[in-house]
Image 1 (spheres, rainbow, N blue to C red):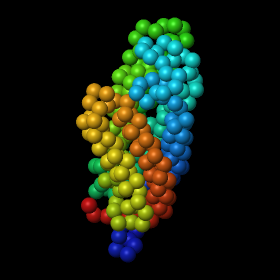
Image 2: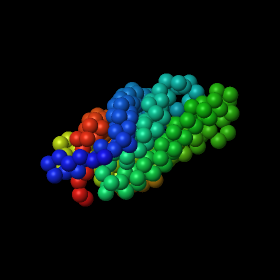
Image 3: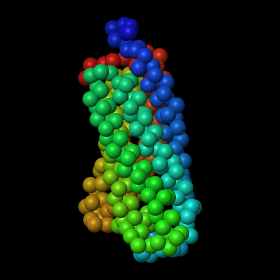
Length: 251
């Protein structure tokens, strides 16, 4: 079903209403998880690598068990963040104008990959690395632990947040321009995504083979801070979509 208002076609189909009603609260929770994760991350001091200054641990990081679970609290919202972001992307895909759903579909696909990588990465820390250290099973743990600045954890996390940044950019492209509040929403997605990509290129030139850890810190900062206003603005956009206030626009 569609209605016409001031010459614009407003989509009011049931799928859009359901997606908007589901997306609005999830977007708020997404913003809250991003804020909580970023705050916990700030309060978690570095234990190894070039940014550690006090109480540092060294390879093979066997004594990292003494920092569990304190240093892992920030991963809880991080694990929740990935599926929440995927859910929001899916709701945007249903709510977006038909002519822009290619971008939203691509965003869902990329967000699915990001959610898988990030959730896997963090769960390995909690369910593999720490139990292994508790039981003194240290073989192979050094390459997996978050404390290794050259380890697999950092590499997978970097990939995950690069994918999140790409999905944010695609979601911005899926939103119809010209409506009240949409411009701010699009920029809240574009700016952190752009900063993430630029930091990847910049840190590759500055740090070379040591770029993984600096880029991880930058990517988390840009993405998590960006998702706070983006989540709030997305909730408002879903609210307008659910009442038929979001109109379809030409590309």
